[in-house]
Amino acid sequence: MTYVHAVLKSALEHAVREDELPRNVARNVKTTTPRPRRFQPLIAAEARQFLQSAGDDRLHALYELALRTGLRKGELLGLHWEDLDLDGCTATIHRSLQRTRSQGLTVLHTKTLASERRIALPTECITSLKIHQDRQQEERQAARAGWTDNGLVFTTVKGGPLDPGNLTRRFRRVLHSAGLRTIRFHDLRHSTATLLLEQGVDLVVIKELLGHAHIGVTAGVYAHVRLRLQRQAIDALGHVLGLTDDDPNDPPAAAVVR
Image 1 (cartoon, one colour):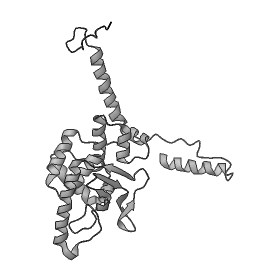
Image 2: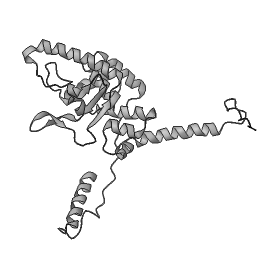
Image 3: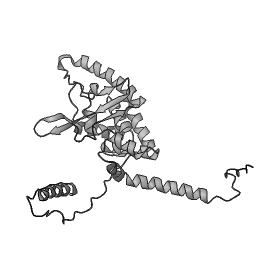
Image 4: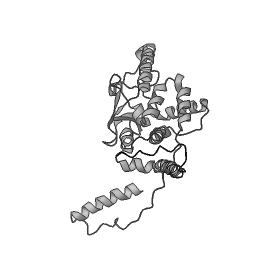
């Protein structure tokens, strides 16, 4: 609702400037403050447990990418092999697989320019992608004429696009087999950002990796994480300032240089 009001207000403001309307009636309308989004990111131990449990899954490379790079579900499912540079360890993100009413599963361009980005791929993802590529080649040979050649990285066993709903169900089975709590697939993306923040990675870097349009979006979504990290930093400083003069952990006094 806040977004709709902002768009309408901007359009009416333009009409006023063009003398097509006497005043902007949306200017005095107050909108409610949106509730902060809730999510349940995996902690580091849970993330390691998840990856270990997914090790034998045919979509292990997808889960690696999701957790290590924070890619959206549609971006993962719309990824083509030509988008990957396995030697240069990079991926170009500019497409997304979406289900539309008119065309069903369709690969579309990302919604915003910020979503179009080039990201670095960690070594673990390169390794799992190469294994996945070999497995896909075996599936292609097994399917023979029944294989659908569309260039997608993650497909069904016959080369067709993966349905997002089926991926969600498969993801939940991996969580269950790992003995982990049930979370949304999108929470893997939140897990990536949260773990990076906890490791001290700059907010600008996280914003670029996730493909957010503005750093304010990144800062707003993860404000509670940053506040918690601030609290830890303040507590650490308080501990240092509370040390006594004869504390053995104190650094030696600086010598006077004459």
